[in-house]
Image 1 (tube, rainbow, N blue to C red):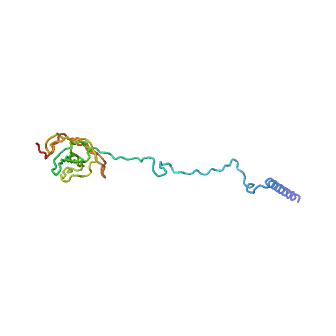
Image 2: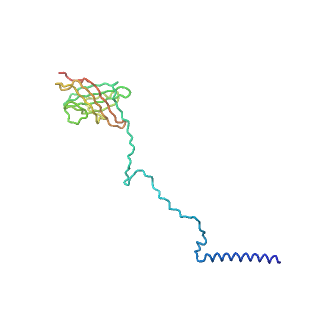
Image 3: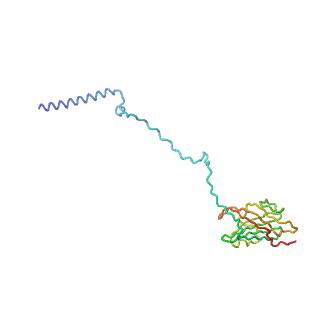
Length: 216
């Protein structure tokens, strides 16, 4: 019976001490907001900065959408036909209202081709090639294939046509209407087409006889 009384006394004393601590803590925090009393302070806590603004990478484009950098240009391989071997030259008179001479350069082999040059007199077109006074290149074009030089003299013109060149075509002075021999040293430049890159053809022939010329 005495042991039970002692146990109850101990329990009562523990309850009184616990209530006193609670009252002391409540007194110490009197007047403070409930939230701060319940949330412990964290030592060294610092508010995290806002996330940095994500910007797209600089691609060299200004505000108007134009790029500061020029795009890489891919140049087509330029061909040059300046061979002498397997090349044959011919020249002939083309009778008509005007004086014309047709020069052909035929190339045999794995990639046969023919270059046609028509000289005319008189002409007022601006010339890339030096010729005697009053003469000039009316048209120059290039064809491919074994039979490409078998051109109808009445069909003066073809594609692709030369768009530039340099050099000279000359002949000795004479009294006749047509020269009977030509000295040709010319490079003709051709534009790119859907099936071929831009390129050039060299024509080199000395004392080339002109068929149809009448010696006087």
